[in-house]
Length: 297
Ligand code: GUN
Image (cartoon, rainbow, N blue to C red):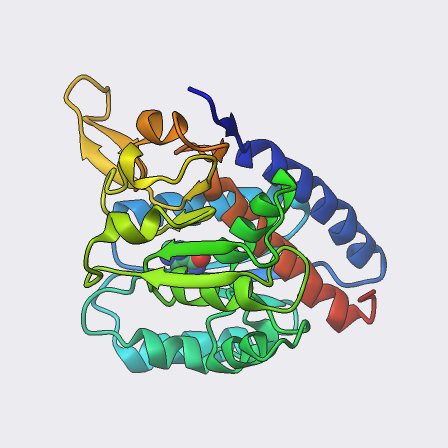
Protein backbone atom coordinates (compact mmCIF):
# COMPACT_ATOMS: atom_id res chain seq x y z
CA UNK A 1 0.00 0.00 0.00
CA UNK A 2 1.32 3.43 -0.91
CA UNK A 3 -1.62 5.73 -0.19
CA UNK A 4 -1.95 7.73 2.99
CA UNK A 5 -5.18 7.23 4.91
CA UNK A 6 -7.51 10.18 5.40
CA UNK A 7 -8.65 9.55 8.95
CA UNK A 8 -12.32 10.55 8.97
CA UNK A 9 -12.79 9.31 12.50
CA UNK A 10 -10.10 11.62 13.87
CA UNK A 11 -11.19 14.64 11.83
CA UNK A 12 -14.84 14.07 12.80
CA UNK A 13 -13.85 13.91 16.47
CA UNK A 14 -12.12 17.29 16.15
CA UNK A 15 -15.22 18.82 14.53
CA UNK A 16 -17.48 17.33 17.18
CA UNK A 17 -15.25 18.87 19.83
CA UNK A 18 -15.66 22.28 18.17
CA UNK A 19 -19.42 21.75 17.95
CA UNK A 20 -19.57 20.95 21.68
CA UNK A 21 -17.87 24.27 22.51
CA UNK A 22 -20.33 26.14 20.30
CA UNK A 23 -23.32 24.25 21.72
CA UNK A 24 -22.21 25.23 25.23
CA UNK A 25 -22.04 28.89 24.22
CA UNK A 26 -25.57 28.62 22.81
CA UNK A 27 -26.82 27.06 26.03
CA UNK A 28 -25.17 29.84 28.04
CA UNK A 29 -27.03 32.33 25.86
CA UNK A 30 -30.28 30.54 26.73
CA UNK A 31 -30.67 28.39 23.60
CA UNK A 32 -29.91 24.69 24.02
CA UNK A 33 -29.50 23.37 20.45
CA UNK A 34 -32.20 20.84 19.56
CA UNK A 35 -32.47 18.31 16.74
CA UNK A 36 -35.69 16.54 15.78
CA UNK A 37 -34.94 13.04 14.51
CA UNK A 38 -37.60 11.16 12.57
CA UNK A 39 -37.18 7.46 11.84
CA UNK A 40 -39.86 5.57 9.92
CA UNK A 41 -39.85 1.81 9.39
CA UNK A 42 -37.42 -0.90 10.32
CA UNK A 43 -34.49 -0.56 7.94
CA UNK A 44 -31.63 -1.93 10.08
CA UNK A 45 -28.97 0.40 8.66
CA UNK A 46 -31.19 3.46 9.21
CA UNK A 47 -31.74 2.42 12.81
CA UNK A 48 -28.01 2.16 13.36
CA UNK A 49 -27.36 5.58 11.75
CA UNK A 50 -30.09 7.27 13.75
CA UNK A 51 -28.76 5.71 16.96
CA UNK A 52 -25.27 7.01 16.18
CA UNK A 53 -26.58 10.51 15.38
CA UNK A 54 -28.61 10.68 18.60
CA UNK A 55 -25.65 9.53 20.70
CA UNK A 56 -23.32 12.03 19.03
CA UNK A 57 -25.81 14.83 19.72
CA UNK A 58 -25.92 13.94 23.42
CA UNK A 59 -22.13 14.01 23.60
CA UNK A 60 -22.01 17.44 21.94
CA UNK A 61 -24.68 19.03 24.14
CA UNK A 62 -27.43 18.92 21.50
CA UNK A 63 -30.83 17.85 22.76
CA UNK A 64 -32.75 15.45 20.52
CA UNK A 65 -36.44 14.83 20.09
CA UNK A 66 -36.83 11.37 18.58
CA UNK A 67 -39.97 10.45 16.67
CA UNK A 68 -40.03 6.76 15.72
CA UNK A 69 -42.88 5.28 13.73
CA UNK A 70 -43.50 2.00 11.90
CA UNK A 71 -43.95 1.81 8.15
CA UNK A 72 -47.77 1.82 8.49
CA UNK A 73 -47.67 5.58 8.98
CA UNK A 74 -49.55 7.61 6.34
CA UNK A 75 -48.05 10.46 4.36
CA UNK A 76 -50.40 12.90 6.13
CA UNK A 77 -49.32 11.69 9.57
CA UNK A 78 -45.67 12.03 8.63
CA UNK A 79 -46.22 15.56 7.32
CA UNK A 80 -48.00 16.42 10.59
CA UNK A 81 -44.89 15.28 12.51
CA UNK A 82 -42.74 17.56 10.37
CA UNK A 83 -45.16 20.46 10.93
CA UNK A 84 -44.99 19.88 14.67
CA UNK A 85 -41.18 19.95 14.65
CA UNK A 86 -41.25 23.06 12.45
CA UNK A 87 -43.33 24.79 15.13
CA UNK A 88 -41.30 23.61 18.13
CA UNK A 89 -39.13 26.54 19.32
CA UNK A 90 -36.74 24.12 21.07
CA UNK A 91 -35.91 22.43 17.76
CA UNK A 92 -33.31 24.06 15.50
CA UNK A 93 -32.76 21.21 13.09
CA UNK A 94 -34.92 18.45 11.62
CA UNK A 95 -33.65 15.18 10.24
CA UNK A 96 -35.95 12.70 8.53
CA UNK A 97 -33.83 9.62 7.95
CA UNK A 98 -33.88 8.42 4.36
CA UNK A 99 -34.80 6.23 2.62
CA UNK A 100 -38.44 6.30 3.66
CA UNK A 101 -40.47 3.08 3.32
CA UNK A 102 -42.15 2.49 -0.01
CA UNK A 103 -45.32 4.52 -0.53
CA UNK A 104 -44.10 7.63 1.28
CA UNK A 105 -42.94 10.61 -0.75
CA UNK A 106 -39.45 11.77 0.19
CA UNK A 107 -39.80 14.86 -1.99
CA UNK A 108 -42.93 15.97 -0.22
CA UNK A 109 -41.50 15.31 3.24
CA UNK A 110 -38.15 17.05 2.70
CA UNK A 111 -40.01 19.92 1.00
CA UNK A 112 -42.20 20.33 4.09
CA UNK A 113 -39.29 20.98 6.46
CA UNK A 114 -38.81 24.65 7.33
CA UNK A 115 -35.71 25.63 5.28
CA UNK A 116 -34.36 27.41 8.39
CA UNK A 117 -34.35 24.04 10.19
CA UNK A 118 -33.27 21.94 7.22
CA UNK A 119 -29.90 20.84 8.62
CA UNK A 120 -29.81 17.97 6.11
CA UNK A 121 -29.81 20.54 3.31
CA UNK A 122 -32.28 18.51 1.25
CA UNK A 123 -34.99 21.19 0.90
CA UNK A 124 -35.13 22.53 -2.67
CA UNK A 125 -34.65 26.07 -1.34
CA UNK A 126 -31.37 25.14 0.35
CA UNK A 127 -30.24 23.07 -2.64
CA UNK A 128 -30.99 25.99 -4.96
CA UNK A 129 -29.26 28.53 -2.73
CA UNK A 130 -26.23 26.30 -2.34
CA UNK A 131 -25.99 25.72 -6.08
CA UNK A 132 -26.13 29.48 -6.65
CA UNK A 133 -23.24 30.02 -4.24
CA UNK A 134 -25.14 31.33 -1.21
CA UNK A 135 -22.92 30.40 1.74
CA UNK A 136 -25.79 30.77 4.20
CA UNK A 137 -27.54 27.67 2.80
CA UNK A 138 -27.26 24.44 4.76
CA UNK A 139 -25.23 21.91 2.83
CA UNK A 140 -25.99 18.19 2.92
CA UNK A 141 -23.80 16.56 5.54
CA UNK A 142 -22.15 13.83 3.50
CA UNK A 143 -20.85 15.91 0.58
CA UNK A 144 -19.89 18.70 2.99
CA UNK A 145 -17.93 16.11 4.96
CA UNK A 146 -16.23 14.84 1.82
CA UNK A 147 -15.13 18.38 0.94
CA UNK A 148 -13.70 18.76 4.44
CA UNK A 149 -11.73 15.50 4.05
CA UNK A 150 -10.33 16.72 0.73
CA UNK A 151 -9.42 20.05 2.32
CA UNK A 152 -7.40 18.26 5.00
CA UNK A 153 -5.25 16.47 2.41
CA UNK A 154 -4.01 19.86 1.22
CA UNK A 155 -4.36 18.73 -2.40
CA UNK A 156 -5.10 21.57 -4.84
CA UNK A 157 -8.64 21.29 -6.19
CA UNK A 158 -8.76 24.47 -8.25
CA UNK A 159 -8.78 23.41 -11.89
CA UNK A 160 -8.38 19.77 -10.91
CA UNK A 161 -10.52 17.05 -12.46
CA UNK A 162 -12.92 15.68 -9.86
CA UNK A 163 -14.78 12.56 -10.95
CA UNK A 164 -17.89 11.66 -8.96
CA UNK A 165 -19.48 8.25 -9.40
CA UNK A 166 -23.15 8.45 -8.38
CA UNK A 167 -25.88 11.04 -8.87
CA UNK A 168 -28.08 10.63 -5.79
CA UNK A 169 -29.82 13.60 -4.22
CA UNK A 170 -28.03 12.85 -0.95
CA UNK A 171 -24.45 12.65 -2.23
CA UNK A 172 -23.54 12.74 -5.93
CA UNK A 173 -25.74 15.60 -7.08
CA UNK A 174 -24.94 18.05 -4.24
CA UNK A 175 -21.29 16.92 -4.31
CA UNK A 176 -21.01 18.07 -7.90
CA UNK A 177 -22.55 21.45 -7.02
CA UNK A 178 -20.13 21.91 -4.11
CA UNK A 179 -17.00 21.07 -6.08
CA UNK A 180 -18.04 23.54 -8.79
CA UNK A 181 -18.32 26.45 -6.35
CA UNK A 182 -16.00 29.43 -6.62
CA UNK A 183 -14.45 28.81 -3.23
CA UNK A 184 -11.44 27.13 -1.60
CA UNK A 185 -11.42 23.32 -1.88
CA UNK A 186 -13.64 23.56 -4.96
CA UNK A 187 -13.29 25.40 -8.29
CA UNK A 188 -12.88 21.98 -9.85
CA UNK A 189 -13.66 20.57 -13.27
CA UNK A 190 -16.37 18.07 -12.40
CA UNK A 191 -17.50 14.93 -14.18
CA UNK A 192 -20.41 12.92 -12.82
CA UNK A 193 -20.60 9.25 -13.83
CA UNK A 194 -23.49 6.95 -12.95
CA UNK A 195 -25.12 3.59 -13.60
CA UNK A 196 -25.63 4.36 -17.30
CA UNK A 197 -22.10 5.59 -17.92
CA UNK A 198 -20.28 3.67 -20.64
CA UNK A 199 -16.73 2.48 -19.90
CA UNK A 200 -16.72 3.68 -16.32
CA UNK A 201 -13.03 2.94 -15.88
CA UNK A 202 -12.07 5.30 -18.70
CA UNK A 203 -13.85 8.09 -16.81
CA UNK A 204 -12.68 7.24 -13.29
CA UNK A 205 -9.05 7.01 -14.47
CA UNK A 206 -9.25 10.71 -15.32
CA UNK A 207 -10.06 11.70 -11.77
CA UNK A 208 -7.33 13.47 -9.85
CA UNK A 209 -9.92 13.31 -7.12
CA UNK A 210 -12.30 10.35 -7.30
CA UNK A 211 -15.44 10.33 -5.15
CA UNK A 212 -17.52 7.16 -5.25
CA UNK A 213 -21.08 7.02 -3.93
CA UNK A 214 -23.08 4.34 -5.71
CA UNK A 215 -23.79 1.66 -3.12
CA UNK A 216 -22.21 -1.19 -5.08
CA UNK A 217 -19.61 -3.09 -3.06
CA UNK A 218 -16.08 -2.68 -4.45
CA UNK A 219 -17.29 -1.50 -7.86
CA UNK A 220 -14.16 0.59 -8.37
CA UNK A 221 -11.15 -1.69 -8.77
CA UNK A 222 -7.53 -0.67 -8.53
CA UNK A 223 -7.08 -0.40 -12.31
CA UNK A 224 -9.87 2.18 -12.42
CA UNK A 225 -7.91 4.59 -10.23
CA UNK A 226 -5.54 7.19 -11.63
CA UNK A 227 -1.98 7.02 -10.28
CA UNK A 228 -1.67 9.53 -7.41
CA UNK A 229 -5.42 10.22 -7.12
CA UNK A 230 -7.23 11.20 -3.94
CA UNK A 231 -9.92 8.52 -3.47
CA UNK A 232 -12.97 9.16 -1.31
CA UNK A 233 -15.20 6.15 -0.75
CA UNK A 234 -18.69 7.09 0.40
CA UNK A 235 -20.14 3.58 0.13
CA UNK A 236 -21.17 1.56 3.16
CA UNK A 237 -22.37 -1.86 2.02
CA UNK A 238 -23.19 -4.93 4.04
CA UNK A 239 -21.57 -7.95 2.42
CA UNK A 240 -22.38 -11.44 3.65
CA UNK A 241 -19.47 -12.96 5.56
CA UNK A 242 -20.23 -16.06 7.67
CA UNK A 243 -16.83 -15.78 9.36
CA UNK A 244 -17.94 -12.56 11.11
CA UNK A 245 -19.98 -12.65 14.35
CA UNK A 246 -22.78 -10.59 12.74
CA UNK A 247 -22.71 -12.63 9.52
CA UNK A 248 -21.64 -9.65 7.42
CA UNK A 249 -18.82 -7.20 6.95
CA UNK A 250 -18.86 -3.61 5.77
CA UNK A 251 -17.39 -2.91 2.35
CA UNK A 252 -17.02 0.37 0.51
CA UNK A 253 -17.69 1.10 -3.15
CA UNK A 254 -13.94 0.93 -3.78
CA UNK A 255 -11.73 -2.18 -3.58
CA UNK A 256 -9.58 -0.64 -0.87
CA UNK A 257 -6.37 -2.69 -1.04
CA UNK A 258 -6.10 -2.42 -4.81
CA UNK A 259 -6.97 1.27 -4.95
CA UNK A 260 -4.51 2.07 -2.16
CA UNK A 261 -1.69 0.77 -4.39
CA UNK A 262 -2.32 3.63 -6.81
CA UNK A 263 -3.89 6.44 -4.82
CA UNK A 264 -1.96 9.13 -2.95
CA UNK A 265 -4.69 9.51 -0.33
CA UNK A 266 -7.64 7.24 0.40
CA UNK A 267 -10.48 6.87 2.91
CA UNK A 268 -11.28 3.56 4.58
CA UNK A 269 -14.68 1.98 5.25
CA UNK A 270 -15.58 2.20 8.04
CA UNK A 271 -13.79 5.19 9.57
CA UNK A 272 -13.73 7.48 6.53
CA UNK A 273 -16.73 9.43 5.32
CA UNK A 274 -19.31 7.92 7.72
CA UNK A 275 -18.13 9.70 10.87
CA UNK A 276 -17.93 12.97 8.90
CA UNK A 277 -21.62 12.79 7.96
CA UNK A 278 -22.54 12.81 11.63
CA UNK A 279 -20.07 15.58 12.51
CA UNK A 280 -21.33 17.86 9.73
CA UNK A 281 -24.96 17.28 10.71
CA UNK A 282 -24.10 18.38 14.25
CA UNK A 283 -22.24 21.39 12.89
CA UNK A 284 -25.28 22.41 10.83
CA UNK A 285 -27.53 21.99 13.87
CA UNK A 286 -25.39 24.16 16.12
CA UNK A 287 -25.15 26.75 13.34
CA UNK A 288 -28.93 26.86 13.16
CA UNK A 289 -29.17 27.30 16.95
CA UNK A 290 -26.55 30.07 16.82
CA UNK A 291 -28.64 31.85 14.20
CA UNK A 292 -31.73 31.64 16.31
CA UNK A 293 -29.76 32.80 19.38
CA UNK A 294 -28.26 35.71 17.43
CA UNK A 295 -24.76 34.24 17.94
CA UNK A 296 -23.82 33.42 14.36
CA UNK A 297 -20.39 34.73 13.50
N1 GUN B 1 -29.69 8.54 4.57
C1 GUN B 1 -28.42 8.38 4.17
N2 GUN B 1 -27.71 9.50 4.40
C2 GUN B 1 -28.56 10.38 4.97
C3 GUN B 1 -28.41 11.71 5.44
O1 GUN B 1 -27.35 12.33 5.37
N3 GUN B 1 -29.53 12.26 5.98
C4 GUN B 1 -30.71 11.61 6.03
N4 GUN B 1 -31.76 12.26 6.56
N5 GUN B 1 -30.88 10.38 5.59
C5 GUN B 1 -29.80 9.77 5.07
